[in-house]
Length: 522
Image (tube, rainbow, N blue to C red; front, side):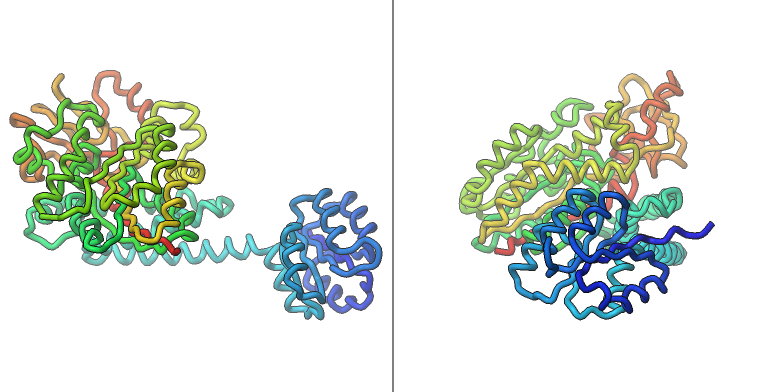
């Protein structure tokens, strides 16, 4: 079947002088109709659909800008390119304000016109073809890389590149590469889990050079900034994946100079372990040993396990002999109303030497999506989950706080997270007694059993610097996209938790995490 020609309308009161340009476009396969005045052009736009309009700015009768307004009223989405001899700034501003898509200065040449046509009429196709080709090349690079010995920095790059491509492909659903993307991520995660399992214990015991873990963030990234006269804001956004941060980062480019680094989360990749480690500067077993009075109370309530973050951070400050100009400020934002209150006060926080601010919304989003059918429908996969995150951030008090702080001169902002999350797609049958914890990606108890192809079985918690919780307990931590399901009502819970975002296990999404420094551009 012959391809439908793109329809162009060219409006100019001296249209015969443009005959060669019009013939050139027709020779390139475009269908071009002509109008010699604004009134005729508006009538034609009302009767026919055009894909692109070239509009002369200076015409007798109805002028270009007035014609533009009428065209946009009839067909708001049609791209209009203004053609003009006038280079004055005020005209350009008026035209842009009236929503022109582009402009050309007379005399125009055929190549300029062809470039504009390709941009508006074939740009999406050309970009899609380029993206598809480049993505296949990137996959080949990743596959080749995984055949070589990799270190923790190599995996940071693989995860970053893969995440960037996933976000790029979000804009091109017509390419049909969704299944390929998922398969690539799944294959990479399987290899990453093997890599992580081989190295983690030696890393955390200092037997092998490894990445910065959660417990090293404050000392490496926050404390050095305190030696200046600046006020430091340390934001911990709970349960934030790299792709979610990259969406937020795009909206912050206009306000900040941005430097991005990475740390590795610890296992279990869950708030009671990772966030306490961030604020205390210690692994969980060391927290249990040195601060038993502050150690987590309650077995499964994650919020109750993080009631002492300010105290942990103050003890870390004292241990490292850091001198603050005034008292540490700590704020935990658990809901939108409280966040709005902090937003209104955030500018005054610049008088405090160190501000630690925990933001829980992304974690709440992940948990609520698991139990809310409407949210599941709105965000059925990673692409939609990113979109939902972007919509939240754009209208959030957190974004407003960042914009307010961007107007402050003597501040530095460090942003990180305690762990990410992964969309769980495969159930792993687990056995445990009544005392076994209830988490879906990790469990601890005295009689926990699991297939070791689906999870790590931790016989001695101190090998992994995990707390023993007053007795001999074992931990199991899921790999890849598995989630735990008990044999009782197995099929019900298998379906209930499938396709939910969870955390606590081993995957790139949960464990390779950004640490970002924001410096205002003012």
